[in-house]
Image (tube, rainbow, N blue to C red):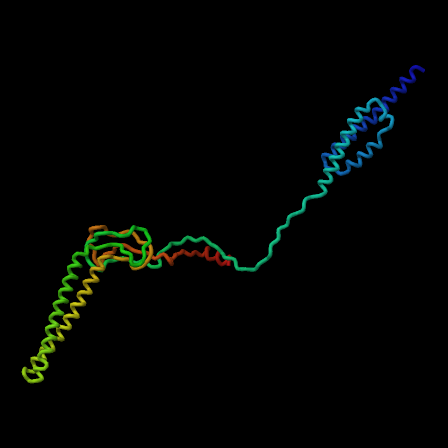
Length: 282
């Protein structure tokens, strides 16, 4: 009789170990389910509560049971929240645009050689010595800008001489006109011979022609003096100077060149492959 209680107590202890193992197995399963993100952890928690015997709940290991229950509850709660968060994905952002039909420019890169639309060679009109260069090589110049200056002193002397010849011709013309005016009434009165008046009239015409020639010489001398300042014929970029200060230049001398770059020419070497690619893009 004395051994009966101990035997029944040992059986009871053996029976109480099975729910404990069952609880540990369920905790491990709940932990695995929480890592996998399964939503069924909440339902397993309810089944766990129902499957624990009443005798185990009332035993001396309530503290262990309470700790295990709290752990299972936290795992179940996190599993439920994780399942809810996984079940509501964020809305997908879709970009839309209005379709518009329009021409699209096609850009290509080509190797080309640029050349001025006008390449003017600057040459002087007169012969003389260069005394000054008035531009910087490679700079932009405008039409009429002075590029070089030639010694103007000989041309000033020629202009003064032409003006003097003009004054002399005008004086001869004045004398001829006075002779004609004086002798015209005398010839009409037959006081002098008509041939004398005719000679004076021809002398007046010759004097008028001499005056016109003298005026032309003055204009030519004035132009020669102005041409001592060599100007640009076009606007563009001035090139390298071909002469230096002190050089003797003439109408056949090339002083520099000016290239017009607006607009500008582009010389491109076309190949069959490039032409084929262009046709395919078009």
